[in-house]
Amino acid sequence: MTAVMILIGSKNDWDVMREAGAELDSLGIGWQAHVASAHRSLPRTLELVREAEAKGVRVFVCGAGMAAHLAGVVAAATVRPVIGVPLAGGVAGGLDALLSTVEMPGGVPVATVAVGKAGARNAAVLAAEILALSDPELEARLRQARADQAAAVAAADAELAAGGGER
Ligand code: RP5
Image 1 (cartoon, rainbow, N blue to C red):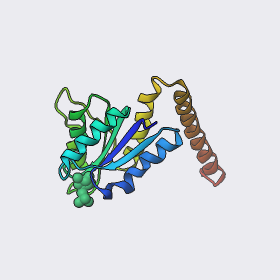
Image 2: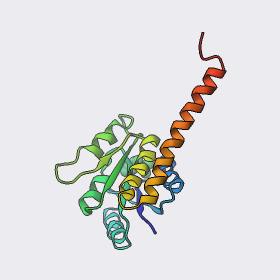
Image 3: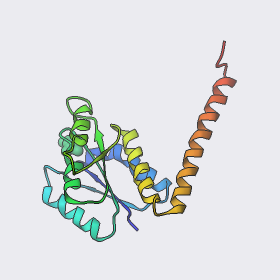
Image 4: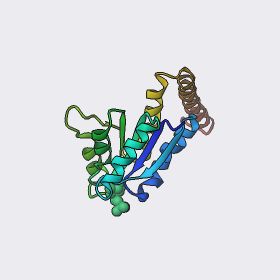
């Protein structure tokens, strides 16, 4: 089942947004991705949202750069959760996209994450956390992923110490 739809404003956004797909894969969540521009192909974008709702997509993840209106337009077209990933590339290195994504008018929220790859990954994790509210097995996988992260930090710390991390 496709639980998450990833939308990107340009094919050039995929290099970063593929991180979201990879994270969803690692958590065992079904997804599909489409290029759908708020500016260049608005009717198709709205059609994709309608189709996604009809086939049971529960969370939208939208990545866009520059005047990043994709997440906001999708949020205007659905009451399902929309997570926005601002992407670098504009004149302000991603700050432009961050503000375009996060500054939504009251009543039409976009849950906005960090600029770039960390944001793409966190969008997937946040989508998973939303889905896990009604899926105890997914919640267990999320808890395991957090435990794995902590173990990786501990391993890095031990490696640093073994390599002479003190004087
Ligand atoms: C946005 O404009 C896209 O999300 C992309 O990040 C940016 C530039 O698009 P391209 O000119 O690279 O297609 O709509």
